[in-house]
Image 1: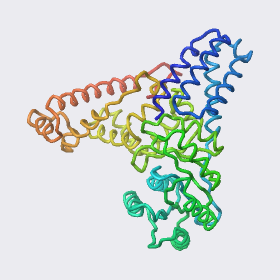
Image 2 (image 1 turned 90 degrees about the horizontal axis):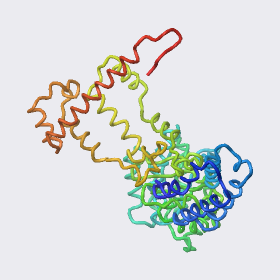
Image 3 (image 1 turned 135 degrees about the vertical axis):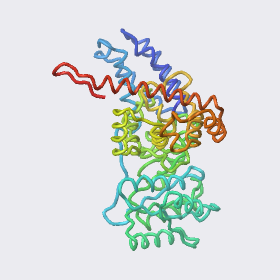
Image 4 (image 1 turned 135 degrees about the horizontal axis):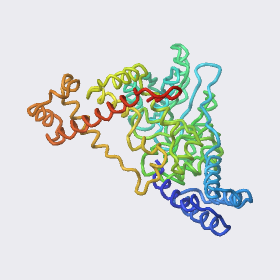
Length: 441
């Protein structure tokens, strides 16, 4: 996410970070470079111009120039300006007092609305809501079937009706939701071009009929300035409440995210990645600004960990580490938990400094797949007692996982090294220290 932009911005402000003295010239040179990077990332020209002017004005302030660390001060100014550009604060979805609260999803054809509907349903269910997905796209072939498939895959209810009138489908869905105690109705509308007058009028009519508490405009994050122009057109007709940026794990330059909020003056509420239904994040401007400037996003990383880590299992693991009873079975369990947090590449991008590394921080996802395959080819007994894995067992594990005996040997050797390190840590942590000094791990 934003990899190219992160690396180029980091290079542009790298010199500023280490400068002990700033002048009007080197600030001007750095701002010119940052503006070039923003324009290359497909940021709206007027947005980039305003951003640079704001940063330059504050960077040339007397307090900054006379500061002990002027370079770091300018980096902070860039960060704060980026936060303001992205929306200042996180804006959650609004819910109405009367049930069901209706979330209407609109956007261009192919922007990922239907998949987002499923992701939003999964997200809201985690927040304690009872969402109902509504298939109101009667134009795209197989759109209803796609939403039903998504609903089935994540165990979310889907309402559909054999009708050629989306307004009627929405009305019946509201009655069904009230009857079955669903508190949130997610209305998946048909994708359309903003120049299609008939279909845009249909959306306006739908809005008047169902009175949604929230209208979300879904924009493909890979389309750059086209997404900004489309958002403006939809805003003029529907006055939507928030923006969703999809496909942010692709080759998105990042310009849409930096421009769309500023041009529409509507908050970005969610970003999504991939096809998996848990690939959705609420949009926090301060966290995203930190990511874009290569500072990582530890808060979101911790939140993702909290979602997948079972506290009871964590306590059991801690006890096993203390008693030196950590096995390949435990290792296998840890891999599954990390996978539920997202791809290793995305996780690495949230660690401060990783996203701005030259050439990007490359994570060999296939190596993890190979390790998982080898662990899957072992019996439970072998994972719990790896010392029983002799030559014939290693050959069977290699054949079953599509790897080589050398790969299995390497995995077992690495695990033994890990066990030794854990033993040393637990023994060091259990040493007695002088009164008043403690060492906890």
